[in-house]
Length: 156
Length: 251
Image (cartoon, rainbow over all chains, first blue to last red):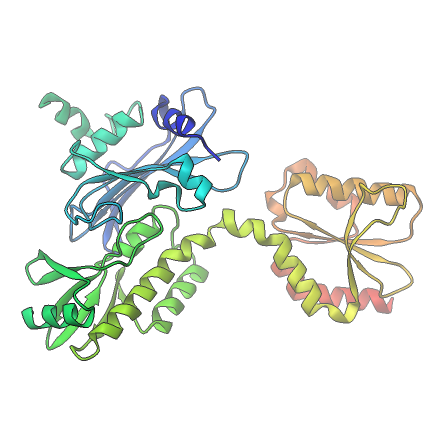
């Protein structure tokens, strides 16, 4: 069981890339994908990052951070930045960018930890979402893999 | 398409809605939710006098966040779920062909298929791994009944910390079985075998591993030295365990 403060700490802690992502996403079964592995700078915590985008509906994307604890076998999706792919039971609107975040309460209830979701205006494209995600999760050294992250910064 | 939309709404008692995602492709807004609260991705379009209900690849994309269908066995399970739920899959897109008369049943059928494919994430190795002892127990207690297995025994009365997982009393010499899924259990099995030998117990031992190669090199050496017979994985034991015990019984 993770507390909300520990979840936030895990999301925000400074991270370095341990397994590099591809420079370009690859196509797999009607979606584009990329992955990388990261760990906290102090080497204490291990994570993986997934990046997915539907091949047909480019606004249907998800970028997530998975925490892999060493003491329990199950991994936990801590945060997922989504496009407006459809409704969520917490907000009956099909056209909203939203962020799933794991909560202590959901873990206690035994439901999927990241069932909690909030609507966001932080991004409106996949590239902006990835930039936001990298900043939010404090992942260093991503510039050389995602050149647009740096380019987007110039315009903001 | 308007006629179909009205028909779907009517069939669902006006509790659903549809909006145009792309020209001619309508997304169904209905209370079918994934465990994380997101709605199922169900798209409806008309093609060549048929109504196609599909997910446009969203189910497998979503599954791939935490689970990949990347082995022949996983492919087999996936194909089985698809075909048993009367759906089809082409290049990641899951779909059902329907007609206006059957659209209500087809949508419910499709949502079943989506739910089952989504739940393949529960087959993750880290989840399945915890089932090793249960799977071993099920196999021994059902398929090896002829060898009269007994579980959880303590051969040394003074040592309740040295437990044998299963006993097969098939010859003059008891046959002890240890299930091992990690280094910790491997060490306990080694200590138990050595202590039983030290106490001059007459026995032979079988070790069934969840994954022998996953043990550390030192633990592999220790258990190979202490145990009599090892099966490198549960499948190995399932295929050869019975004949081994039979041969042991006749010696």
